[in-house]
Image 1 (tube, rainbow, N blue to C red):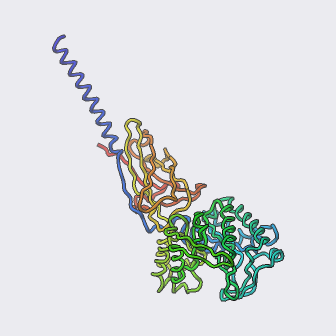
Image 2 (image 1 turned 60 degrees about the vertical axis):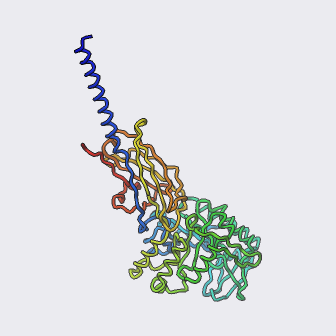
Image 3 (image 1 turned 90 degrees about the horizontal axis):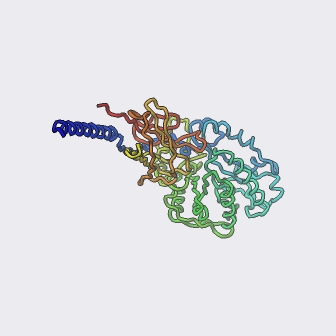
Length: 468
C-alpha cells in the first residue's frame, strides 16, 4: 500500500478517535455538574405547622383563628341527651366544627362524664342516671358534681355504645387527630375522690377495659392518657399534663414519666410505667393550670414554665391557653411555641448522574430537630420542575416520618430521568401532605432559598447548568 495513503488513513482514524474522545469528555463534563451535594441546617424558630402549638376551645372563635389546632370537650350529657340519640348537629354548632374543617385545622377531643362546678349537677344524661343511680354526688375543694360508678355494668354498657358512636363520627375524616382518654374521673383526668378524700376511680383492670375501648374504636387518632399507665404506654399512647404552669405538679408528673409509680383506686392500683423520651414516639399535650394567674405564669414564672414544656416534650397546649390576642403576651407565647412540636427538615441532598441509565440518582435525607416527634404517616413526595416551574416528575417516598430523630439521617433515593425538559435548568421540591392532600408541612430549613412553594411543594434546590 502506498505509504501516503496509509498515513492518511491513520490520520483519519486518529482524528475520528480524537473527536470521539472529545465528545465523550464533553458529554461527561456536561453531566458531571449534575453531581452535587447540599447540606441544610434546621430552622428551630418555625412554628407555623399543623398538628402542633396551642389548642384553644373550639367554641372560642377569636382564639382559634390564631391556631392550627382546636380543642373539643364532649360531655356525655350533651352528646347523648336522649337514649340512643346523638346530637351531632349540636356538637358541630357548639364548637364551629364545619368552619374549622374548612380552614384545615385539626382537633383534640376528650369525652367527659364529670366536670366539677359551683352547683350540684350531673354531666351524664338524666336517662342514664335513672338506669344506674349508683354514683356519688360530691362537694369537695374541686367543686360539686356527680361521679358515676365506673364499674357499674349498665354504665359500662351504655358508655361503650356512646364511645363507639363518637368514634364512628370521628372516622368520617381526619379532622380529629388526638383523642385524650377521658371518661373516667373529674374532667376525664382519671382521678376522683369523695368528700372524705377516698378514691372513686375503678380498679386497674376496669380502667384497662376503658383504655382498650378507645384503642379499638379511635383508629385514625393518636390516643393520650393523663398518666403513663402501663397498658397505655405499651399500647403506644401519649400522655397529657393538665397542670402546665404549676412547677411543683409538673415536676411530680415528670417524675412519674421518668421513674414510674402507682396510683390509688378503689381496688387494684394503677401501675405507672417509666417512659423517658416518650414525646418523640407519642404525643404529649396538656393545658395551663387554672390555679395560678396567667400573668404570673407568663411573667415571673416564665423561665420555669419554658423549661417544664421542654422537659415534657410537648406537642400542644390546650384548651386552657393564654389570651392569644393580647400583645402583652406575644414574647412569652413566641417562646412557648418554639419549644413545642416537631421541626422536620431535609438535612442533606445528594445527586449523582448515572451514565448507564441516563438518570439522576437523588438521595434525600431527613431529620426532625424538634422537641417532639411527628405522629402520623403522612405521605412524602419529591418533585422536579422545569425552568418555568412546571412539574415534570414526582415520586412518593417509602418513608415513615414517625421514625425521624434529630441525630440520625433517614434517607430515601429517587431516580430522576434526565430528559430534555431539565437539560439546562430545574428545581427540586419536597411535599409532605395530609392524607387528603389538603394541608402540608413546611420544612424547617434555615435558608431563605427554600421558602418558595409551588402548590404544596416546597422548593429546596435550583439547578442551572454553567454556560461555557
